[in-house]
Amino acid sequence: MNARSVAILLALVGMYIAVPLLLGPNLYVMSLLVASIAIGGVALAWALLGNLGGMVSFGHAAFFGVGSYVSALLSMKLGVPVFAAMFLGGVGAAVASIAMLPTLRLKGPYFALAILAYAQIFRILATEWKSVTGGSGGLSSIPRLPEIAGFDFGSKVGNYLVIVTIVLIFALIYERIRASHYGIALRAMHDSEDATRIVGVNSTFLKAMMLFVSAFMTGVVGAFNAHYINFLEPDYGFSGLWSTIPIVAAIFGGYRTILGPVIGAVFVYLIDQLVFKSYIPSGHQIMLGALLAGMVLFSPTGLLPWIVEKFKRSRHAAA
Amino acid sequence: MTELILQAIYSGLLQGGSYALIALGLAVVFGTMKVINLAHGELVLLAAYVAYAVESAFEVSPIVAIPVALLVVCVSAVLVYFLVDRIQKDRELNSLILTYGIGVMLTNAVLLIWKADIRSTKSAWLQDAVVIGPFYSMRSELGFFVLSLVLMGLLWWWLSKSWYGRAVRAVASNRDAAKLMGINPRTTEIVSFVVAGILAAFAGVALYSYGVIQPPLGHALTVKAFIITVLAGVGSIPGVLAGALLLGVVEALTVTLLSSALQEIAGMGLFLLVLFLMPNGLFGTVARRG
Picture (cartoon, rainbow over the protein chains, first blue to last red):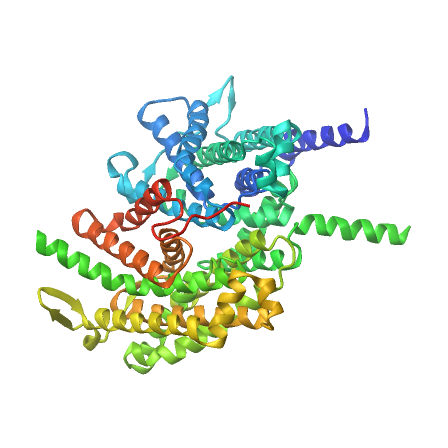
């Protein structure tokens, strides 16, 4: 057993056994953890699109909201089991991303702007389509996660285990894609899309696939969130916060890494909830904007990689 | 019904004037720096709130606030420039994230200072009706539409005749060649941000004078400016004006015929349609890849 697998094993033991045992009784801490890991899942999906697809999205709130609404409605109106509904929520978000395919014709900044517009459109649709979504009144008493084989997934610890597992699976999928030959083609596309097209890579298809995968992941997390908080309204489900926090988190943790965005999300969400929100309750996003702008200016590859680098250097200097 | 539709078209055209100013600001900066300023709509929002602040503090017409708005917005625009200019690596991508962050900051700063309430002008003079033939409008709508046409005329004159205006176009078309001709691209870039700020300031005061404002508006304006630039294709002033008027009319017709909530979706529908059918925009020339 090498050092790497020992580290992975320890991390798994820590996440699946130590955290629930030690922090499980503290409901407040657990709820913060669940919310931050859920945002980590969105941040991971965002980073996948940015890192592999080379696309900056300012509209992941659209996928988040679609996923949450699809899952909530399926489980409420058609009685679909919650876990299946969550999966279908992801599928719904991926389907919604089809509406964005024409924007793949647009390069760089234009894609970013187009997706910014889409996020608003879906919010308006959710507000106006009253017969299905309940309009701005929202949906309440969305079914919680079920009890299976005597274990209650709807409890705080159960919720925690579910979201940790979802995010881990996403990280694995991300890692597989990156290691596959698609990953190589995608990385080549990042350097020169025209050159990659000339050697016969269908760049539009690959970008579309990354968009689907990213949308699916975000949709599943959105669906989880709907069943976790049991309530949904357009201004919450499609809140700009679901676009902003993942970006801040992904940049904070280093968006070129796989787990960086997740770790970044835990940090950023905790800081936002415990510090920013307690001092500036209504406009706390101003701090997220400042954090984002600051990071892009001083360390665009991420704050966490930068700190690790500093730490390594000082250790070398001491030795 | 025909009267309603004609009235909607008229109101939409008037609204298009401010849209054109906002879109031109976005386009000028994109021309010189190849940077999309995602905080551009927020600069317009800032101007609108400056007008509100001046009106409520001194009980004067929002028009008096134009100089203050010009000052505040141009200074902010130049600040945005200096921040964007600091980016070294991956400028296209990182400048998007940076200006998005600045936009979030501005929206929330406005929210913190002026609260989330919807605001509109109290000036009765500006809201008085003006009748031209069968068409009605507010005095401010018509006045600012004419003003925006004048500003566009000035912009056109400036870009084609003045030294700095020609420098802006030179940098936009070929940065290195422009440098060899003795143009300082940095100065030109600052000038383009100031011009964008001037246009944004007028547009912001206009929006406050004939409409309602609230903090999330900035974001929506950036999106609209972008839709117009896609409609217009690679920017020419008449193209942007036509795109802006078209967006204004489509929005106004949607509000009249369907519902005011669908206004934003109408713009998107137009945008998608153009993207599918004419990816180079309504007035753009065929672009080459690579």
